[in-house]
Length: 476
Image (cartoon, rainbow, N blue to C red; front, side, top):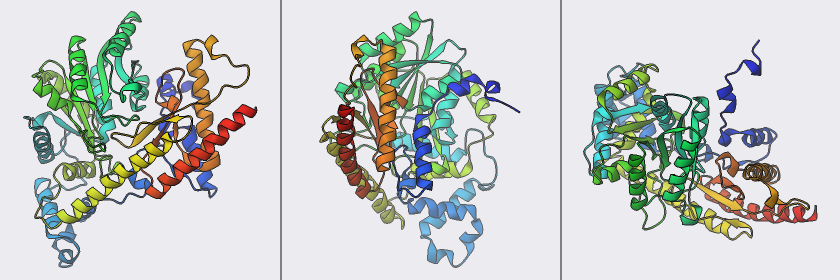
């Protein structure tokens, strides 16, 4: 029988905080009848967001094609849904139960290329697009391609989505953290980038890539064009590939701010040397189709012989799941004005986005009013990364702690705080230490996804909890 000593040590080192011990405890409490407000993960439909009707109608016909020719179908399905399903069957006659090309169904990659062209006004090559089981599989494929040995490292933002740190640990590679500038709306700071990469080289690490999440997870930041240009110049100067995680590109809420893709900025700069991987997913935006595991990544500035190796890598898994590919197609090629499904699609899309915008404001402004908490109203994505302060117990002198000791001290405290919050209120959030944070600071990440009433209740419960938690600490 296998024991823990027989397990790959890289797997043991890989940590994924958004589904960690606190989430497990939340599920135990829920099994006992407690109401839990799950704010730990960006899983919209698990938090009562309804699926977009058009997506599910087309999928239902494709899963049971005989429905299309039944007389009753015309009474149930809009005409454009039936015609779209028939078009997909014509383009992919083997249906949803057969393997596809390793890179994905050709007409879907063509639709994605057209989507990028229309979004950015730039030329796009459908043959440099690969469909994946969500953006996570695309990130893992890119890292598999570029990591050659144990001394290779990838620059990742701190705080970061733990997919990156966990995958690097799993692959036995090095994490090169760079702190985001919390005082400047979580933008990237050139000095911090330079200091980070120079420090890694002194440690014998070979930096090969930089990962950027825009809009940000867990920060909710949206990068400016100037900031993105700086990042591209930095990547070029240091011969780094650029991994652009852009899965929240639809999720921008603040007036006057908009999403700009790295592909667009790179094209405008006429940059042809920096290899770019751009990732997108059906799990976020307003679709929230997490369970269908659909997504893609686009590659720019890569030698053909390298791209062939990437296709070979994808072929090891045969292909991404076909339903996920179909949902990806419907994301990039939705109903058009004048088609029967368009008005309902628009109503559902706008309704979801307006709710997210309203909830981001309610959450951000509400938490900011709590004494000892600080939170910028999320500009984008689905999260707030909330900074909070706690008093130190009698006899604790943090000035005598090393950087590592201070980080361990605060990590223990933010974990205990979030666990106590769950036990007392049923609110499940993720400690900031699960994403990384500056030593001497504590945070937690919460989503903006629960229904509006739950968000308002969350703010009130959080205020009461935090006040009592601090009061109890001062008594001890």
